[in-house]
Amino acid sequence: MSKEGQKSDLPVCSLCTEPAVIYQRHVDRHLCGTHFTADVELRVADIIKTQQMIVPRDRVAVALSGGKDSTALLLILNRLLQKWQNFQLIALTIDEGIAGYREETIQSAEQLTGQFGIEHHCISFSDLFGDTLDAFLKFRETQACSICGILRKKALVRGANQAGATKLATGHNLDDEAQSVLMNVFRGDLPRLVRNSGADSSGRFIPRIKPLSLISEKEIATYLVLKDAWRHLPDCPYTRYALRREVRSMLSGFEYRHPGTMLHLMESKKKIEHFYAGSVISEPIKSCRECGDPSSGELCQSCMLMQSLRRGHT
Amino acid sequence: MKLILSDKDVRILEHSPAPVEQILLEQGINPLEVIISRNGKLVSEDTVIETGDEIRVIRIAHGG
View 1 (cartoon, chains in turn green, brown):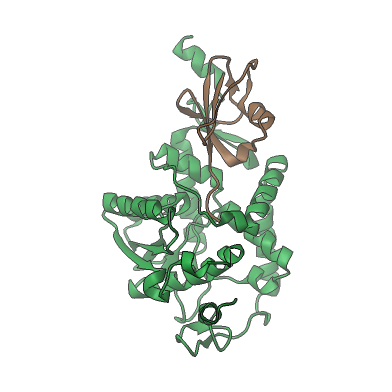
View 2: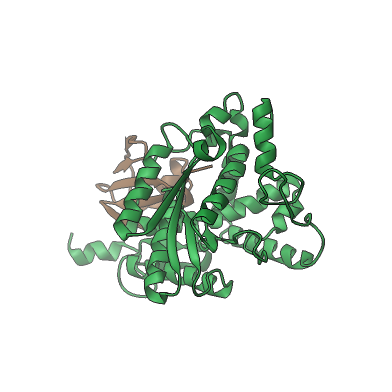
């Protein structure tokens, strides 16, 4: 078959005549590699500007696990940094201590930051909490994601503070965010549903930003393949216990049958946030009496958790 | 056609030319949870797969 013949079999880009690498179902559009990578970078730049996620002179710490989402985030922010040149970019990796899983992703994170000359900080659960996640989870495997989530959050905030960051950027994508909306609804957790971790905190804690929150997981994977940065990494051994896994599968099925479902969920969250703006829904911010970090109660979540873990139950 | 799954599971399918989306659904795979390369090049899910093609299916969901 001729080259022309091969090309004619392929769906082509809606913006040029090159073969399409992706079909964006929610906008009914095909894009080639060049137009797709430009589109992703433009959408990320747009959400950063619209939501004022990064302001001049910010020192942005990317929470870099070495997995696909944080890798894509670092690559895109590094591209934007070259264009905007008005903020600093550093990377922060948390070593939870998950044998057979974290070693490879940390290696990947080190390679990536080395390649682009990005300042890289690493902090471990062992240093911060005295033991590995594997040790904490002995006989508590089914609680893995909630325990890890609380400790990881603490470690990221501590690491970002130590590194002098003014913003903490995480690689949460559209799928993650839509799953969280649904999970909070399932749990009846309205305060968590409307909580805005990027809001102005009057200096009490480093605002978290999620520049990939409107980019789908499939788009992120496609972006990485096109940038020759896709790596086959092992799955976290604890994901089989996660509620998120069930929600992910269900939501993905909905999105396939009803394109735009995830974006609609995000719009619903935004409307609920707007409706509750100014309402007293969350506890006022206090200081944890153990560690001094901002907390809604006498003890922050992680200090409360550590006390329970030391007592032998959660 | 040859279907290579992420877990190195290789399936030889006797299939007439069809969109990759249809082939994935027949294999119980949601097209949104994978990216596809045909003969080494990324393609969109409505690309028609021919009899002699090699299709690599890359699962994208990780983490918890």
